[in-house]
Image (cartoon, rainbow, N blue to C red; front, side, top):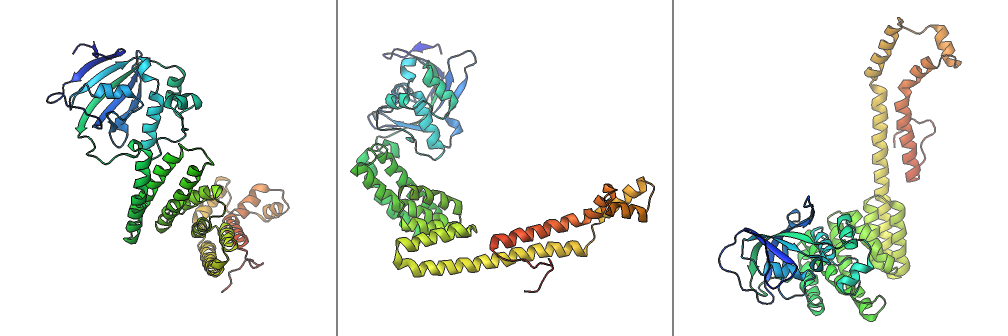
Length: 408
C-alpha cells in the first residue's frame, strides 16, 4: 500500500506491508501489546540498529502506562493482529529511543533495564549520562534524527489478564511481590530445586534495587531497602554453593562486603567458596573474620579450618603423586622420538657416534651443539622436578634434597 501520514499524529507516516486479521482491536488502558520490531536509520542503506528477534522474547508494552516511547503505543493501536507495517517517525518522536533500546537490550541479557539511571525523568537521564554503552545508540543521543520502525503486532491481551512485568509495577506493587518471591525461593530450596530458587531470589533483588535506584543514597528508605536485599543475596549465594558455582558466590559476596563489612554470613559463604577452589589463604582469612565478628562461631570456624587443612593435605599428596608418576614414567620409557631425531642428525653428518674428542669438547664448552644434544633428554625431567618444587612451596612442604621418590 502507498505510504500515508498517520491520521491525527504529525510526524508519523505509515506503510502497511502485510495485512492483519479481523477488525481493529479495542485498546483500553492496561491492554498488553506483544510485538516484534526492527529499527532502521533513515539513510540510503537503511541501516538496522535494533531487532527484537535477536532477543529471546518479543517486546511487550501496555496501553496507558506512560511508556517512554509513547509513539510506539500510537503505532501499535493503529494495527490489526498479525499486521506488519513500516512507520517513519520524525525526530520529535524518537529522542528517547536510545534509552528505551538500552533497557530492552539489558533486559534481554537478564540485567536490570533501569541499570545506571537516577531518580529523574527520562530526558534527564539522557543528558546526565553521556554513554549508553552501545556506540550506535550514543550516536543517536548526540544527533537525534528520524527513525523507521518495521513492526509486527503479534497479540493483544485483555487488560490486566497477565502476570505484571517488574518495570510495569508501581513502587508499592514491587514491595508487595518481594516477600512472595522470598517465600517461594525458600520452598524451592527445601525441595532441592536450587537453580529455580536462585532465580526467585534474584528476581526479588532486581525489584528491590529498581525501587532503591529511585531513592537518595543514605536516606532512611534507601537503607531499609538495603537491609531487605542482604538476606536475598545471601540466599542466592547459598544456592550457588549448592550448585558448585563458587566464583559466582565470590563475586556476589565480595560486592556485598564492599558495602557491609560486618556481614558475618557473607564472609562465611565466601570462605566456603574460596575453600572449594583451593584458595587456602583467602579462605582462612575469611573464616578468621567470621570468628572475629561473632565469637560464638569460633568452634564452627575451627572445625572448618581443620577440614580445610585436611583437604589441602589430601590435594597436596594427590598432586605430588601425579607429578612423581609422570617423572617415573619418563625414566622407565625412553623417548623414542628423541632418539630417532638424534640418529637422523648423526646420519646427516655421516656419523654414528660421538668421538672422544667431541665429547671432551662438549664438556669444556667448545662444542655447544653436542652439549645441547646431551642435555636434551634431561629437560622434561627437570621441568617435572621444577613443578614439584613449586607444588611443595605452594603447600608449605619441603621436597627431599636428593629429588628421589620416597615412600610416605
